Image 1 (cartoon, helix red, strand yellow):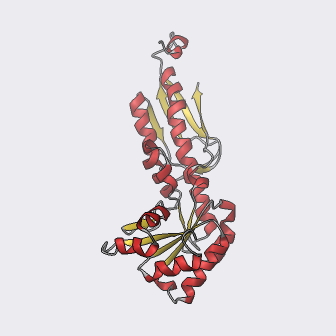
Image 2: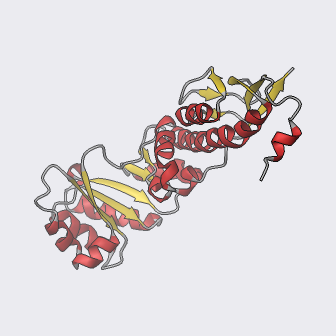
Image 3: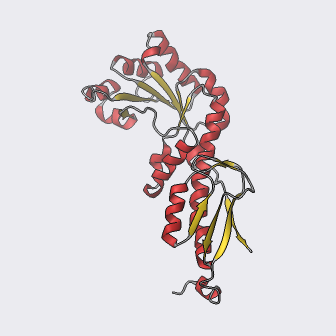
Length: 265
């Protein structure tokens, strides 16, 4: 089946045009490497005047491309789509970091639920925004509710990884197997390094933190909080003293930082 664009542009099919790339709103640029890969793939000459992680300003030209009419149409579909998606994620991550004001680390681990084809780009976008996609830079073992359920208990799960020397043991705390206090105590007594309170309930975070303090373990363990956290909640949540705040949907599913191509005449 013939591409309708070949018919529309039949009289100028090989003519070269210049087009300006312009963001529709201000934010953090991401997806530069992928955009250049796509440009090479479709035969477009793409020149960006900003680098990954730099600020784009609404209405200000951030790059130009030289291409035939059909290639420009393809660029609007593919290059803009990629830049808009990853820049939207980077902008949301940057906003989260700004709201945290250095009081807690911002983590977005939900890249794991993204389609395989865009996982690398999502991780890069999170980092470009100043956040991180892992709760620790050290090698780690993450024992979530399913691991714990299959192995029988938090203590059994930690025993199973006891010989994983050099790995931080992360335990998901949900109050599923016993109370928040009991799960926290069991994790601490069996070598947990990071407690992930993954319920989205502030009272669970407080109960976990109080248990850690009561056991005199606060300097020996880090506390992370997750569960439907919204960006608007960050200023309040940082008052509770957790080490990491994990934000999923509002970063990886952030609104696109839309852009447009304007053909220059």
